Amino acid sequence: MTTITTATTGVRLTAAVDVPESFVAEYVDVYKHLHAHPELSAQEFETATYIESRLAGLGIETFRCGTTGVVGVLKNGAGPVVGFRADTDGLPIAEQTGLDYSSEATGTLPDGGTAPVMHGCGHDTHITAALALASLLTERRDLWQGTLVLIFQPGEETAYGARAMVDDGLWDRAPKPEVVLAQHVMPVGHGKLIVRDGHMTSLADSWKITVHGQQAHGSQPEKSIDPIVAAAAMVMRLQTIVSRELAPTTPAVVTVGTFHAGLKENIIPGSAEFTVNVRTPDEGTRATVLAAIKRIVSAEAAASAAPEPSIEELNNFPRCFNDPAATRRVVDAFTADFGAAALTDAPLGMGSEDAGWLSDAIGVPGVFWAFGAFDPELFEDGAAPAGNHSPFFAPDARAAVVGGTGAALSGVLAFLGRN
Image (tube, rainbow, N blue to C red):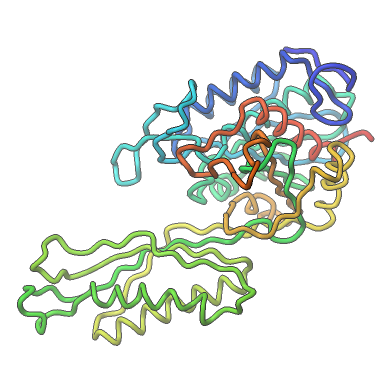
């Protein structure tokens, strides 16, 4: 294991801790390995085994939770208990970054099909930072006191993992934390941090709506109840929810992502189905938008003399709410370690996260922040690198290790640090 020193030589992670180049190089290799071997949500078996092996090498006891989730508990005397979460799943994306450690992995989709897999959202950086954090705190016990619960969570992309771990007894089996922390890489420059109190990400809901009709020959529409016409009317009317039922100052998105109906051009089918993805900023807006969707779908079916449509929930993401007092402690730590200029209070985006389940399930504060891992020169002249979920998403490996580990260390020591 690489020896870590105070801030005098080497690579600076925080104002108090430097690490040698060999430490950075070790975790760049970890990152590249993880990037080249992504797995889809709920299929992170090799990833979980790799994490367990790394933690075992540090002497940290682990247990499985939620099938492919891994929990490690690192103790250092009496003191507070802090949870730190890193998500572990990849996405069904064919990587096009051209990196020499690009993914060539494939995975199995829910319908049984095969798809290429990529860490297109940066969860490989999150795992790497958490493992590096564990290594740092294992060796530098003089820096902190208390208990750190390391949560390597599967299935974030499908809103499956956090709830699965809670349902599998996470907080019955691990020490209950006083706060749960989490972070996410974003397409911003290395050294930049995004954090604010209140809602940090949007709530999200995905539904599959099946419109029932009556099949008939295309030449005899009078004998049909056309589900395509009814569903098309629903899709168009759904677009009015944001523009006509919400205030212009309320951010929300209603997206129809898929539409499937029929097998032949001269047959009016018996059903049509489409999927809807909804992003809302808070619980009240969520309730308003979801109620409007149900009302519109039901009313348009009635207007077509069609039966009541079926609605199936595909997934939902909870709030990701940053407790103001806990967030202030993190902001103060970031300011001391990285300077006020590093912090950005960006407006609420429409992305979603399931980390909030981990803290809300036991009624403790949560703090979620974002860090940058891209060359600042990429942002010159108004340009920007490819964003999350793009086949071209490619954080700088070294910046991901230094920035992600430094932010994780600073945030955790805001609660566990001796000073």
